Image (cartoon, rainbow, N blue to C red; front, side):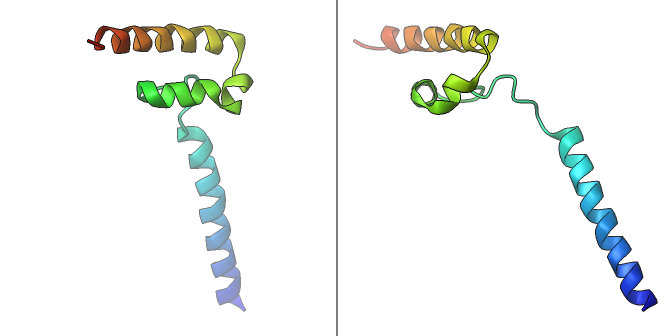
Amino acid sequence: MKRTIFLGIAILVVVVGSIIVYFVYAAPQDKPWEGLSCEEMFDFAMSPEHQEITMEQHMEFHRDYDSCIQKMDENIP
């Protein structure tokens, strides 16, 4: 009986600790497009997630995306 209680408490501590660590150390999604290639940014622009970002994020995304497109245009012979 005591063994089961200690095991249950240990599992509970691990689960609660994992949840706390996840929320404390999870990277914020201020820029969900960060680290994407130009092609992936194009896919993001066409995705439903693009419609869910805030207006400030939207403007910042297009600033980053437009510079990416300009670089692609410069590489076209």
